[in-house]
Image (cartoon, rainbow, N blue to C red; front, side, top):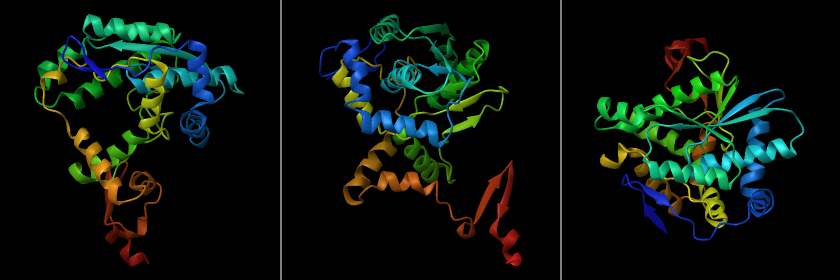
Length: 288
């Protein structure tokens, strides 16, 4: 089921009515333990995303991914074996009032203590990126979130990118940009010294996030963008559909795309870039 917000963007509506908060929190660790909780914990451990003494700014857009991530962090703090602090931040880029109210209502229902700040990004992007606003919007959102995280004394900024975002980004770069780049589980902010960006949902597949939100009765925002609602859809949706089609004939093709970034054979590639410099395999050919 779905509805439409006042700005023309779709809002995902759950199949079930809202469940008691205690039941929602319990299901995240019990019912969805294998597909969400365990994979969240695995990413935290594998990539050392959260460590003793960290202060993490959890960025909440109002979408299903960031809402689930926020609840996972609350459970980690409740059941974890090390001390860290959390700030739940919501950047309002210019949401329609009804969308903003829905976001706040979801966070109240889920007992997520958010701090909202305005940025006016939608208006800026509409003026400077007429045809393809999503890329520019993402960059400006990131900068605004970094600034707020630093203001709150956080050393890490958590974003809700999941497994499917990772493989879609990888394939998007191969097919449209002509390079092999993936979405990393963590990276140091280039313009905000002392802050790391982390992606704790790195191993979590989108389908289970969708199932959890629908079964819990959460009404997540899908896009809520006042600008993209008037534009042509971006290439990421085409890549998502392509992967779905590939999975029909190639078993676990999504997992193979993910593993490809872990198994790059440096002796069998034509060239690569590092620290802003380009290299060719011919540069090292005579050394063998």
